[in-house]
Image (cartoon, rainbow, N blue to C red):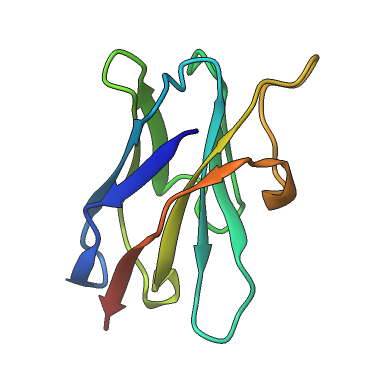
Length: 127
C-alpha cells in the first residue's frame, strides 16, 4: 500500500505562487506515474498535471500550462506542484495520485488509472 500526504495549500491572492508537496510512504513510488488533480466546488475532479516515473516527461492541462510545473524527487519519494500566476479559478482541493506502472505507458490522464490518492490540500485564490 502507498500512502500519499499533500501539503502546501493555503489562501493566497491572485498572481501569487504556491508549492504543493506530496509525500509518499509505504513503498517507493519511483516507478509510478504521479499526477495532480483538482476539484473545485460544485465541479468534477479534473486532471492538472502528470509526470513520468523518471521525471523526464511532464504533461499539463491546457488551463495550467505555462503557469504550473510538476516535478519529482524519487530519492525523497515526493512529488511537487509549483503553482505560479495563480488565478481565482485555480481555487480547488488539489489531490496527488500514484499510478502503478503499465506496459507502454509513461503517464495517465484519467483518474481511473491511478491507484492511490491523497486526502487533498485546499488552495484558495482571492481576487
